[in-house]
Image (tube, rainbow, N blue to C red; front, side):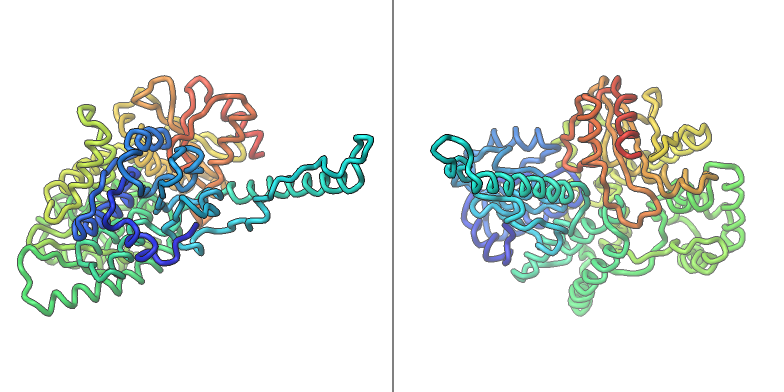
Length: 550
């Protein structure tokens, strides 16, 4: 059931008790975890923190630690599955679920005893009514006559139940068909801290990074990001006005909201490389081609930015160029159809150690979470990302930024290869592409975050370079070799570019295609748009999807 008052119905309940904290491996979950850790430290709440990577990991982690605590908190994991059925907890265990994945499992919504949902009911779309899903089972034979034959009342009752079951199946299919994301968990946790009068700039920054993750990873509509950013801007003004009114020490963090260039990592890179490897400018100029590169050079000349300045570190550029490049690009945006070259962004400055944009921190944390260093376990990578968010850990963020640069270069080169070799296949109702397992950069695409970034980049690049007018209305399937299990591959499905909404139907489509083609798939990740299939079953899987979506 939904929690109406997060402070009294959640935090006051767990305060003074030991808590088991199970956290999903994404940036928003890590930010929410940091905020909750801060509150726990304030109140001396004992907790056990366990990162979970999928449904199997969640089940195994709970089984190992279920005797440690009566209260279990799930962050960005568990809402889409029937928790009581899957985890089989003792009756006294209570779960508090703060998860941005949708749709929420219907049994979690209507559980009155063990499940508490830390989210707004208005943020869950199309929840079926209780009577449409649940019905008391009664005996259908009680109205049989003396001869053992069903009476008329019994026949009518059975017919009524059959119609109700058919309607239930339809209602449940419609509800579970589309997967999407709701409000970031980090914002919900920041709202809790604010209501407890314990919010500060550090907690605010973590919430802003969690919000930026949904923008960077294409998880929510751009309009919803803008509305959420506007609501958070009031907190930014409130906190930073208070701090500006007092003496600011060098170690103080300052947060601002302003127009920023839609170029990834440009403050920590050269402007030329940032334009080359950022999805927005690469697709607008078609930088995978010689003609596109020439057009970008013309753009730089027209705004009066010498190439020698663009090819050196942004921090080493002339002061005039560095301070005015945003305004110069915005002035030329209409001529070159770069209507989104600037956008509203949150920027933090920690003393004299440099500025960090929230979207850049997202890329850095994602790179740390999905680092390709085989000597580190998934738990080590999770703790590295968690530690990088700690106050003053600028060097850890910079390490993540360097890893993010390597990923961005790999993504661009793979997109360039797909486009130039024409390896994006039009299968009729959808597009698909397969990342070759011979490429050196395949190690990056074994991870869902990087594969998702590649898929969105590839789809936009294909639509911009294709002569087929239908390309923008087709979804994309992308297959990548799983580096950890050579016999299987990771598949992601993303919606068409023409649809402004990132809502996806692929989770249910994957399930139906596997059932029809009689192949085994593993939808172990919490996001249903990803699935694992056996490499030998690719053609069967594609044929089944073709028949399903035609």
